[in-house]
Image: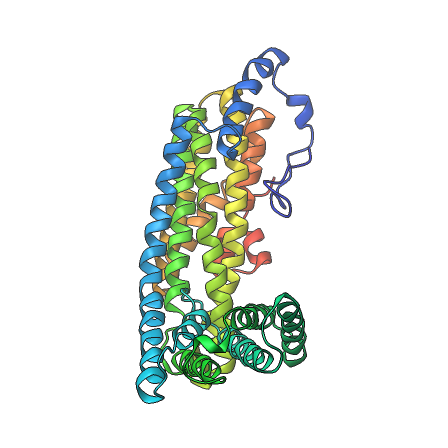
Length: 410
């Protein structure tokens, strides 16, 4: 039986359903009663038909994720806001400009509001603002203002930015700022034709200086996000284990909804590791962190794969519970995986060796034998759990070959 992926590019890769599964299929009568109800629960878990229970699960996850985003973004936003204020002060008080509005604008646009600040990205944004303002100033001074001038200056600014660098951000900001300058002619400023360009240059330079000089711990945020993401997988598995133990398909569908709602955490982890990789490449002082960042990047890829497999297990469990009822033996395996994943979350988050988690995972992997179960749906669940166990073992530091060796022989 071919495993259906949770989404394009994801899903089961190992532990296919054992041969002969079709001969062990559930009786038609039971499948006819169970499948429609299970399909409705799956639709709710996927967001196609959200009932009150699923909304509560999803909103709880979103509130938890949103709170973490606010906490993570507070310092970056504060840094950008303070830098914008300093840029306004430098242009206004030190350079003597009356309305240095483009200094804080350039600083804010270049720094942004994310912790994943990359030198190249900040430089692109700052250069884009500066180039756009400069070209706009020159064009207004030479040709005046009008719809034709706006179209022409946008064309020139975008082509100039493409000539200077391949970055998309530079081109976008150069075009936006040039149009803004042409639409707001220099006569509205008392600082001269090139005053706004120098303001933009001040803001961009300060943003780049803050990014390069401000002390940064490139592994702290990826570790924190790793702990959060792995803890979400553990929480999903805990909910799923309850559903399998109690024979409650609603809980299995809740686990599926929880997995869908947790995806932004994994995306944030991936973004943080990309930013960390860029920083350790350009900053000699962070050279010693390259190995740690590489490990966290590998763990992030594997965790995303594990979450996809956990969602596949949850979806299959809805049908299995509807047709087979409680499955306490399978629930015990899922509970053990949840415990191991929780231990793994703490170890990766702290940077400690995940010895306890690895030992637990080795134990459960050696017990996952589909042939011990009757009914092809339970066999399929155990096969999928084997794949999830291999992902978790790799997160703990094993190679794929080593992880596969821990599985029980079929």
